[in-house]
Image (cartoon, rainbow, N blue to C red; front, side):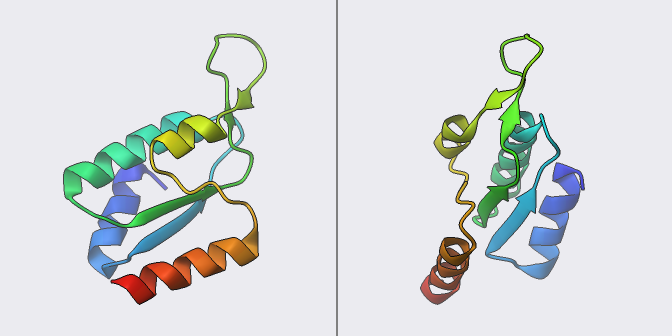
Amino acid sequence: MTPEGVVETLIETEARAVALSTYNGIALSYARELTEKMNEAGTEAVLILGGLLNENTEGGSLAVDVTEELKSLGVNCDNDMDKIVSTVKEIYAER
């Protein structure tokens, strides 16, 4: 789904959180675009991103882990399902 499509769905459903998995090698660029679109739309939904969180950021032939860069964007990168469930429960309890 495109970042625009995700944001449209967030707005339509008034979701407080969105959990997505990315294709191998696009995690950082996708998250950057999605968080930009989310900010433009004014949504405060929490973005939870899972899967193989890597990208070729150095122009080399191998993708590298980008988890820390994603976290700096405010993305929740926890791949522990129990923690994700707890996080979502907290989000819905707070708002």
